[in-house]
Length: 80
Length: 355
Ligand code: SF4
Image 1 (cartoon, rainbow over the protein chains, first blue to last red):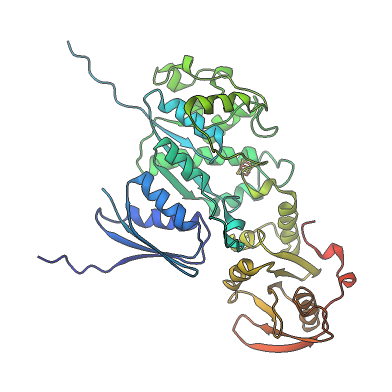
Image 2: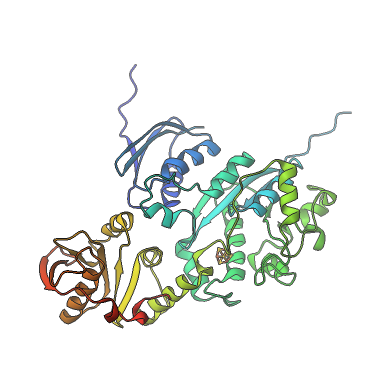
């Protein structure tokens, strides 16, 4: 059976400075079920370090990080 | 007969990102306590901000020290936005300010109180709170007299443990109940950092952050002057999060009481300011490379011309006789005005906000 086509969860933290992208990600993850995939959009280069660090201490998995010019994108899988 | 295992006690540590809270948390962890951390975003935090805004192409972004500390300890870190409620602390500190606009004692009380709330609201169910405070470390907020004030006014009372200076204070609940062994806590006091550095070495911590001054912009004189200027200009002691973010970057020049200019100093700042184009009238020199500038306040038509001359002065066309400056309103209406860049001696030193 294929996975249900759930809408992709997105946190838009563009224009926000760290630690706000981390805070927005944390607030969103609190509401999500384990296994959910969350995409975070950001522009502060610090979020490339901070969000993965936050995920590591909370046990969530960063599946992908991308940076194109000033646009940053992280894909996270929420853990239990 | 088998003994019933004692439940593991849970503590929440205020993690600033500095060495003291790192050590305090580790000392308690060593005693078998489950520790989690909390770090607060007040809007005034020094953490990485100006660094993130300014364009430093070849540098790695600065790490977030609180998260780094959490990783060293292997603990969860809850990063909490308290910027809205924190206003009251900055605007009406019951215990007054430190050397600048830093309300350190009220801030500590507030943060310990918020930490307790976190335990209740999120049902994280902590048995006690711990901080890295050391008696005598900071002249205003970390004195022998302030320790009980923080404990009492935050509502934590004897559930507030300071592992690094506990031996100089009466035993707290975690000590009396035997959750932590008082003999394995410390009696640090005074401004010396030596005992902390020795303890760090013992635990194998290196590369920790060395705080310069305080943990936030409110301890900074120039920043505090800019904040006072904002209050004076708007004729009320209040601020929005955007105001205090903008105070961290750019040149702030107030040629008239009714308006000031925020002028980007390099590409990164210009880009950051560009994010505010829909909230402020903004100016940029048309035919030369130059900064982006926001106008904060209510300028008259003559003021805008003056502003344009100042912005021209910071562009690469500053030596030109005349140049064009594009002025864009918040609704996106643009017009070009021709001005003579201001000569350096025309720019009054007193216009520079903060100095
Ligand atoms: S320096 Fe700033 S964050 Fe630190 S205690 Fe003082 S007011 Fe609070």
